[in-house]
Length: 442
Image (cartoon, rainbow, N blue to C red; front, side, top):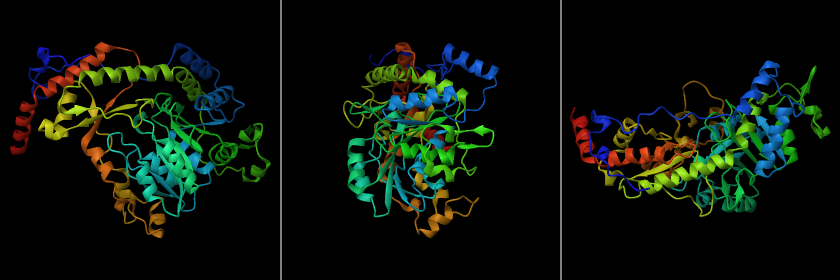
């Protein structure tokens, strides 16, 4: 595919009163199979609302399937991705002020789960382009109090788990992977989610494995599975037998069974929806990659935008979102104006984060707004995450934007319309420079 030179690129931009290049309705996603919808209908007709353990067939099927898919022994369904990551921290007994190092360039749940389990989040910087956590920065910022690494595979791109696992082994650190955007991604031929001690995944309605709102934890450690269960599931009380009735429940944990739990249970309906998506996640990801290859070829000659490569040749991305590098100097206009023009042409584009997560005002020990659970912990530790410098994360936010990429039916014409939108904006940069001047003088 090459950049088109059709007249659309020369006509008035939609932002300036012209007609948009793309005006079709958004593509439906997720798309659940007829088989999955029929299964859910049966569950609703039969009133199957709770799945308290693997004794419920859909819960068992989902948990065994995700464990096999990610190459580990244990899977645990949860109500959200946050619940999955929190369960991993609980199962690894990370708490009581333990420092957990993570990325400042990720969705906030990668940090809030650390705070929710009474740990302190510390921050390494990222690699510009991919936005993935930088092993060099991790090594530089480890302290004697660091107990674990929490590694987000942002936008479906796999982090350098080879280097990170080496660092963890050297410092005797636990490793949690946040694969919430990276179902099926691979690093050096191996699925992410199977490297660390435990991994958490979101499975809400925009993820490669999609339910309405759900998640799952996977781990290769049996004790992590059971310890997570005691504090996040219904282990078993009264007339509703739960996880304690599963084969292998440890006698050592029976005294810990009570109702003092985070309610992170997965419903059978969500389990059924996730199972259907799991069957097609690899072919869907292949279509995402093929679409990105077409778009990359199509805009290759445009001066203002490009796609940064994956961190390692041969790794496979799940491409939950596409990262676009923006060259404001080449364009001669701000990124904000460029995005306004793209969106007006019908190509939804956006900035993923307004700032690094560690710069959120509520992470300051001086926060005096609505009270949150972690402020006193930060004060006692004399630690202010908002003062941690992460210049590469700042540059990532400044110089990049994102595209939604849940397009799983192969359609070169659909991608060509994206190329046309980029080409039209690039062909009208002078008009956009004049627009900015007018806006500035208004």
